Image (cartoon, rainbow, N blue to C red; front, top):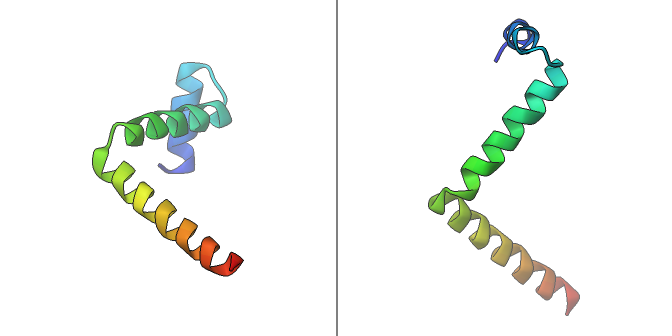
Length: 58
């Protein structure tokens, strides 16, 4: 979204651009929580990172 688009949308909704961006970010977070593929990828990455940390701790 271009900055001027965000300004127009925020102004039309009577909110700040910051509030608009926070709403958009929250909507994206809620969306990915329901995405099984994304959550599976996230779990695999977390497990890999945990394995790396465990090896470093040895």
